[in-house]
Amino acid sequence: MSKNAMPLRIRLFPVAILCFAVFISACAQTQHQTHQLVESQLRANNTEAALQILDGQSNSTKTTALHSLNKAMVLRQMERYEESIAEFEKAKNQVGRLSPTSISESLMAYTLTEQFSIYKPTIYEHLFVNSFQIMNFLALDQLDSARVEALQIDLALTRLTKEGHFKEAAFARYITGLVFEANLELDNALIAYQSAYRNYESALLPIPDDLQQRIQYLIPSPGLELDTPRADKERPLPLLPQGQLLILSHIDFAPIKTSYDTTLVDPETGHIYRVSLPKHLTRDLDGIHFEFTLNQRSFHGQQIADIESIAMDDLNRKMPRLKARALSRNISKYALAEEANQEHEILGQMVNFLGAMLEQSDNRHWLTLPNKIHIARQPLDQGAYSLEIKVLDRYNNIIERRNIENIEITANQFTFVNFTWQRMPEHSIH
Image (cartoon, rainbow, N blue to C red; front, side, top):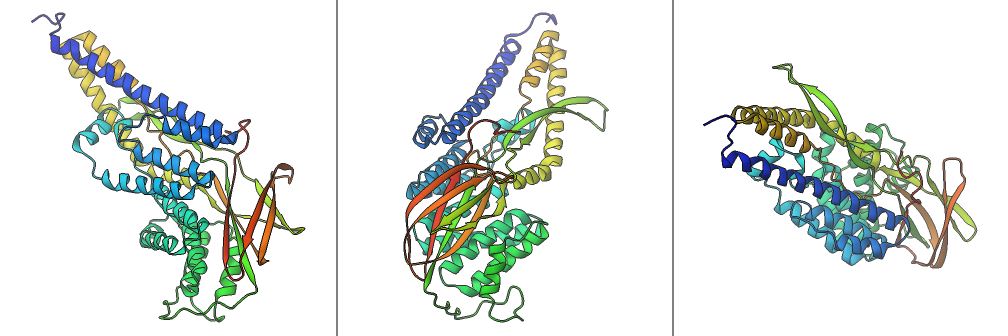
């Protein structure tokens, strides 16, 4: 057969690949547009509209878990905690059910595009699923359910701290300490707080004042060692005439995940390949903080989690593996183009062009995660309170004022309040 006469199977092959490339590109574009719409609606405080956009989104099984995670966070912001809990549980079940990766999926991800693989939450995202479930249960005063989530985190953290995930472990330990303290399990609370303290130190992060104060308050004697074995019977909580107000403040959104093009060299052949790799864009939110006022008494929150920093560290940790996969993928596509060129020159050019179209990094991410989380604690007498909130920039200029009415404080109990602040679209990405 003449080299210029292409058989039907060869003529149809690039058509099939082109359809697949267009489909993958369209999916990525749709996801990006959906993220922009959801973010803009949330910034305008149109939470119902954001929820409708997510509900109207077409999701394949590859992004079902991600859809549930984003929806759960919007429901949290709307204080629809029961529904948020249900969406988080859907995400957990979906991730667990889809964990075994099929051979065909692996081949497509390694040889064509990362976008073909099922979305799997990162290690830090797994921890934040449990952490936000804890905060949901605490807001509903369901302490037993919050304790179950805390124990689930506890099982994972020992391994993660050995692998150097100190930043995310510090926050998770802090949250579990809150749960144990609210449940009056003071020895377990002390152990969790001390573990959080060590993780903040290992991550070279400032130790939150509240964490230091809780350790000093709960420690039974000056000589107690860290991680003292749990007592068979918990120490009784010293009775206080006041309740505790804890404010968990969420700042803006996690960093945007996008891509950049670079070149990698095949060490065996010296051939240079253009590859697409993911990167994060900072939201430039350092210095944002809060001032709270109750009964003409003001107090401030303090940062306990920097999710932007955690996300960037996680991506940097993965980058050597991502580069190796990108190089392997491009070597495979180059070999496929060379083989097609043996069949027909035009076919080889088409396969080479389509391979370039398919070179996209996996930019899927949990958009609605906050960028940073702050905590503030205030002892209060029993009664109903109105809370004034000032959002301040790094120069202490007031950006916004908010009020939360009718906060009920009960003596000797914890009251948890969730507050979310998302700035207006101007200068949202640096």
